Image (cartoon, rainbow, N blue to C red; front, side):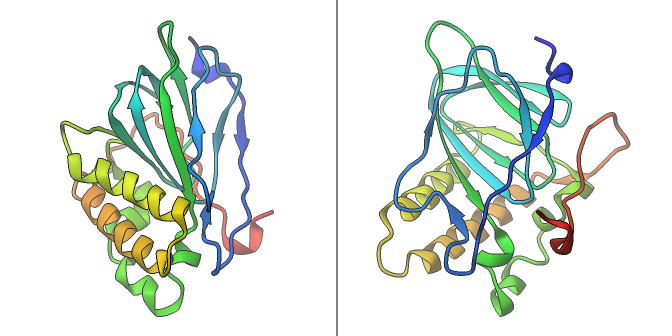
Length: 193
């Protein structure tokens, strides 16, 4: 499969301080196609976890094989798409997170020093098998559970879980080496559609 020939589509989402996550109120379930049609990128973080199945994840010019259970952390500007392989499609859950709205004002200081806040400067694994880091996998599951159930103070819980996840993922980040990676720098707030 030639992923480079697929168009990259900007995926937009509307967020606010009251609703910095998408979706809220339900768990988004996704079965990647055996033959994807397009890649996408966006100006927010996308978290995912694969319960079962296997496939390929294309991220920034790299083709990365996956087998569930695993988690994915996709940062703003990363061009990506998941593809199932085999007879049965893999089962993923995803959530979009607008960090600036989730950690508004003084709360942004909680995460602003993390490497993950400047991910475009680093090389890192966008997919991590559960057997390699069960904590990151469980944090993805817990973030999506909180967003789906909308219990009292769920945004406070999500802030803590996302801060822990970004801190944990920052530990994998190394200064970027010049490479053939394709990464689109996030749009400034004033230029967003």
